[in-house]
Picture (cartoon, rainbow, N blue to C red):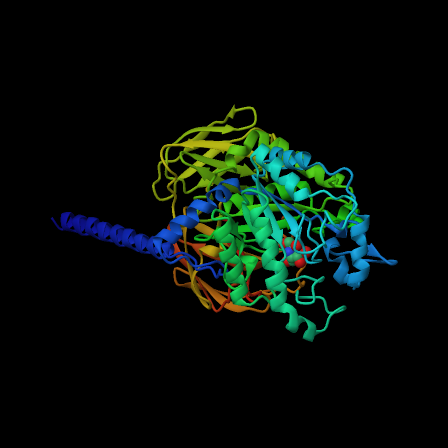
Amino acid sequence: MKMQILKYVAILLLIIGSLSCESQEKKVEKDNLALFKYEHEGVTQFDTQEEKDAHSERIGWWRDAKLGLFLHWGIYSVPEGSWNGKKTMGNGEWVMNSLKIPVKEYEKFASQFNPKDFDAEAWVKLAKKSGAGYIAITAKHHDGFAMYHSKVSKYNVVDATPFQRDPMKELAEACRKYDVKLCFYYSQDIDWHHPGGYGNNWDYTEEDFKANVDKYYREKCIPQIKELCTNYGDIGAFWFDTPRSIAKHWSTKIYDVIRELQPNCIMNSRLGNDTGDYLIAGERGFPSWKVPGVDWEHCQTINRSWGYNANLEDEKHWLPKDMLLRNLACMTSYGGNYLLNIGPDKNGNFPEKALNVFSEFESWMDVNRESIYKASETPFPQGQPWGAVTSKEGKIFLHVFEWPKNNTLVLSGLKNKVTSVKIKKGDLKLNFVQNKNKKTPQLTITLPTTAPNKINTMIELEIDGNAEVSSYAIQNSVTGQLSIDGHLFNGEDGKLQAAAYFNQEGTYKIEVHSLQNFWGGSDSWTGGNQEGTLTINEKSIDLKFKADSIYKKRWFSYSPIVKSEFGEINIKKQGLKTVFIDGIDLYRGVNMGPKYHRKGLKLHYLRFIKID
Ligand code: FHN
């Protein structure tokens, strides 16, 4: 009898224990759903549903396109980065400013601009074949020279050059023919030619600027934007830039003028003063994870200059094509667009190295376009160690950049039934196994021994229904590793928490991987010298940050990654745990909008590696 009672008590205790474990796990999962709060700003806030719907409607094509071709082309391609025995190793389109070329001298480049090889159709076809849905070209850059036939000022490509043709008109026709959206870059704030334009302090004084700024907007900027809106058919977007001095009422005025003349045209946030339809997410660094709730674009140039600069011929100034192609998958995976730039030369040709990049895009897009065009961001709460994920209704696309060592690829957290797995190139069906565990769903795919595409092998999964995924990080049962991405940590700086599922008991090594800086930024590691604690299951470990090693993972970001090691921890029981980090400031910005800051640890991920 006594034994019987003891047995019932034991069963009851077990039930209570498992129930409290269950509710504890539910709580952890719920806490984790409170999404990471991003600091982003810079776009127009649409208040009414009607405004929001109108915005969605006009930006739909851009959301679908994912890839755009950016072109910086102007009379700065004549000096090719050098003037009067001096040269710039920076932006070719900035040559006037970098070498302080007086207006009267710079104007002379116009009389030498005669791009005999310019062929609008060839440019548009190149964009189309590479998979770009739009072209954004400099109608007027900071030098103030109009690359179209403007009646506002004779300082334009038809009236001031021997070329006498309007390349924007020819591009507009070719874009219509090949169904590519034409977008105009227009430097609304910086104009080194006009005394009221911002930025020329070698020809003009501060007083000149102040006395002429309104005149500049009234007599040049706004009338030119009106011309671009009326003479070239439907414009996909206006791409504004560097809003350094523009007053709010001028940003608003430009927005309104365009909205009236081109109701379907969208505008980027660099119009300034929190005005625009979509955000520009940096150009020397981009978000390393999803940025929800906002339309954003990352622009990047293939070498160290946007406009043509012959001083940058050396290979070391060019970004590798594998990085660029992988970036496209990353941008789509993080929910943004990718605007990839090249600077055609003074004859209207694309540099050879750029053509090589675009032919790589062309052959990859030929096979894998479906995983980019009209695709959505990754449904998973965090990144994958081998690459990136994009999705569509009933489909998940795995972009494998780094071929897993044992030819086994693990995808954790997918709850849907998978019905087929194939490498898109050659339609190669792959064997796979899905475990039945609801809390730690895991798909294990057997891969061929070598990657069919060394840059990005795209694997297509067909699934039942729309993707449903776990909201927390899950330990990879094959590698024994559990990584928690920085953005999974919620809470205030100094008091952060994230949820993670340990599916194996044992001893784990702890590592933190953080970004060192941005490409072109300072070399100082903003995470250094921070001190805090890491707590799991009431067991705490001191976090005293130092750089134990630094490595580069080029496809992931521009920044080197710093690895910091923090000893070991024993996990006695498998299950969903809350991981707390106290005392550490995290970098919260994603290089978006003026409020982003560079303080704080740029946490890539916290990793537990099972050693015992
Ligand atoms: O100053 C410009 C630069 O020349 C180029 O046009 C880039 C493209 O994003 N925008 C400015 C720098 O941010």
